Length: 310
Ligand code: NCD
Image (cartoon, rainbow, N blue to C red):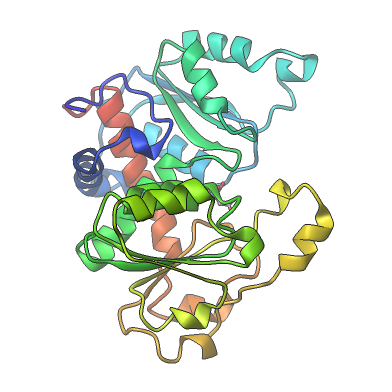
């Protein structure tokens, strides 16, 4: 895409490698504004609506922070309780309304495909902030930014995705994005939570090296990035199935004994028990910085979409 202005962001596959790099470079330039050191009013008068039908801390608040740091306004809801959705209003009608009240619509919804549906009913750009077990493209952009900042590159990176690769939308989008670069991927999951077949095929079609295992010790000492995820309890149709896999992985200090010196441990957060608190104090822990990067990356995206950055 030559210009981002007015575009929907539904799936990371809407982006080319060049588009991704454009967002990351724009995000780097946003850091002084994202941290409040430099004022920016470039989106003054613009309004972002945020429709969150599912719980969120970082995604919603960093989108709000990003819009406000650019001088824009924000409206929306953090849960559907208290809105006319509880009276039976459809997603389509809700979207039609906020489309008229704002300039860009950010939506998180438990159903896969909900953001695409919203985009069909909205005339303004729609940004997918997570649709069920589907996609989470803005998380992927901040994940890529964190790797690019930390290692100085994306091509050539050796990365393991660990945990719930079946239901985790962050790892779905991230796999698509990483297969645009010359990365070396490992999928570490219990067999019942391995990556969906179409994403495995996507990596293979690109001819990239791919390792699949359930044992984290098979890969932990070789990787540059360990991307750990939460088992997505809310997506399991049967609580007994969740009980079988809960607590499968736990990153602790003894497990890190022989890892690469510059290993980056990432996690989209929230974590439950996948990473022991003792790991937070090690130089490997990058998950809090990763979450902070969400503001500059979302500023870059909002600015490119709303015409604040040409
Ligand atoms: C993730 C999500 O909502 O998909 N959180 C986030 O946006 N940072 C990951 C998760 O809930 O496990």
